Structure formats: C-alpha cells, structure tokens
Length: 156
Image 1 (spheres, one colour):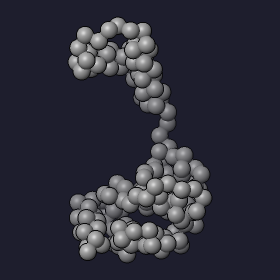
Image 2 (cartoon, rainbow, N blue to C red):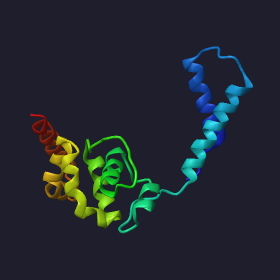
Image 3 (cartoon, rainbow, N blue to C red):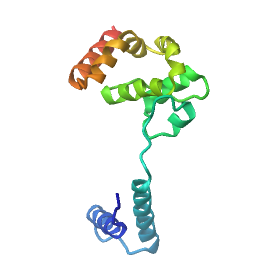
Image 4 (cartoon, rainbow, N blue to C red):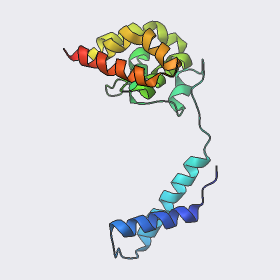
C-alpha cells in the first residue's frame, strides 16, 4: 500500500487552513505537517503483524493485535508487567483477549485469576466459553448484547 506523501501534506494543510483561517506561513508549521505525513506514510508501509497461535508473550505484545483489555489481561496472567485496569467493552476487544490466549496458550490455565480483578472480569470469565463460541460464529450482535447484559448484572 503506497500513500502519496505530497497529497497528504496538501490535505493536512487544507484542513488546518479550514480550522485556523489565515494561519501564518511559518516554516515550523510546514515541517510539522511534513513530519506528520511522513509518519503516516511510514506506518502504512509497515507490514501488519497479527497475533498467531503460540507466538509467545513478547511477540504478541509487539504485534498489532493488542488492546487495552487484552494487555491488562496479559499483565495479570503473566505478572511480567503492569498496565491500568481495563476489560473488554465489545466483541472486538473480546476477540483480542481470545487471540492473546491463542498466542500465549500457557496463560489459558490462569484465566480464573481475572475473576478477582473486577465484577466485569468475573462476568468475562464466567461467560468465556459461551462468548468465545459467539465470537467464533461471528455473531457479534448477540455477543455485544450478552456482554452488556452481563456487565449490567455485575454492577448489581
């Protein structure tokens, strides 16, 4: 996938002019726009790294298949690092948690430890198999409803 750096510079400049009409033509502003366009182009040139079965914790953390809830889960189950508390809010978040355990299968036997983290995580663990089945069946609408219902009940 190849992006047009000059086109991006032009688009960013146009958007900035819309938001700040009459902005002075300062070289540092143009340098910042060029840097931003270069960062975007560089990121789109980088290959996407998906989680894969058995890749291990270090490789999973370096992949593009992590999120706040799955990183929190990895931190608790591995005990190797610390991140702020988060839980899966939707099917996409839950899918990243599933793929964490596929990438680092030795953590699966520790899943029960998540129950002590919060009522929401207790709901995740209690419903794991059912939710995983819904996720694998690509029934995200039903899964989302199940998740929201379980989280609401966990607050009671």
